[in-house]
Image 1 (cartoon, each protein chain N blue to C red):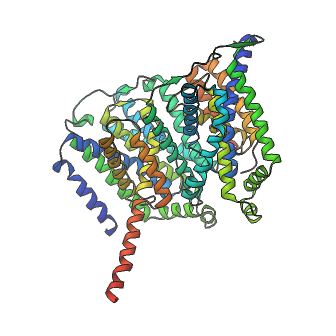
Image 2 (cartoon, rainbow over the protein chains, first blue to last red):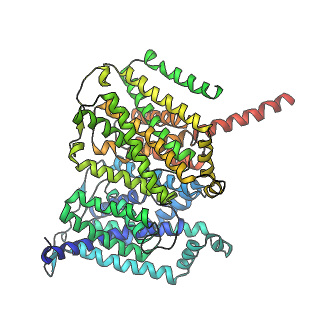
Length: 290
Length: 324
């Protein structure tokens, strides 16, 4: 059972899956780190992005990777507008309300998609869906390898944006001391919306990376959400490096427990980690004190 | 006694429904509405009065439902006894989850997440464990005798769920006027201040969660008896958790009648949408979600809050006219 010929491909595949988890979690952790709310609409927005990517390919004939170029700014704008015009005003400054509003949005988006596209599951046929490369004893699908590379690069870019640009500095200022940031002239409502937009933009990229090798239906995004929550908590709410490492880790755990326990029980491994971390170390492995 | 008069009046009025409109369609609708009112009342105790927003009320609903069904099907326990044990099982799960989360100091987003995760873990376990019938689900044998908690017509079911809703209204009213209720509201408004005044907030929260779970589990037990079928997606599905918080928030969070009002509005809206759009799936839920957002944004007190605002306006307006 423990032979490296089985273990190595399992770990490698886990890392690939984990990279997409990490990207979804990255958006979530960014939003939590700044706004201090859990975005319960994250899964529904991911589903919406997957539908958008799907129809870009089938209706416009765009390659999914090319579609990402257009969809990312579009979803940034969508996220910005959602926070600026709906979640922010509706929450009246109460975190509890913001949770409810994002939950309400999730219900609206998910069921609007259900109404528009029915419960059918759709898959995309791209010519390279089944092309593979061999890495040692493992065989890896090309779309998954691309996804892995893009996520690593994107996480670095996001980290740089937060470190080096003025907007990034403003975001970090609001995250660590909202009142202070406001007093020094930062438009907090704008920064909140930008952050929400960035988090939503991550989903557009994730959707375009997923669509060549995954399916889409009105609940497709939900499969990623609790996993993303787990990663966010494990990596420390608000920590980008934490989300990346925890994402890869959770991907490997899922792959290995799937190998030894079977598909459905493999998922339980993730939730057990989740609950244990929440109970024992709610600030996560990389997070700051809460 | 004056505090209970409105409850008695409302329950008495609702008790007449099967006599006035005995059709199955009306009774099915009313049973579904009262079921949500009951499940929502469980959420309201912890979320509305205690300020702890649970996103996983399905954990208690499902546990109650499964306990009732499994005890009957696997162990031949009498349905009425199974019902009581189901409520106890739900309460026990609530106490365990409450003790774990509140001892760990979780609140806000963290509490919402961990309750959601517990419901999901139970859902996955129920979908693979042999005792719950795994993916096939569990079927309670048809046995139309009152001793088996099954009835020929819908009306007895309706009166039973109404009795549970009535009991939950009375219980919440008693809590509202009790020291325990005052502690709950105090920790909702300012937990640190409540603690400083000597309230054992952790204990109060765990007690509230246990009671909340018991009320919601009663809804689950009833569901099992009424539909005689369960599977993991029904019992522990996220929809239970959503409807449990939808009803009290729309009706009026932290009020005795909020969940009942909210359930009536939500179900009526759902039926109206179905009338207008036919059987197209999804649209009724789009409206639920929209109403949830709108209520949080424009009427944080829900319908009950709107009503008292109107009453206050009228009161201010009427004496003015008299003097003018």
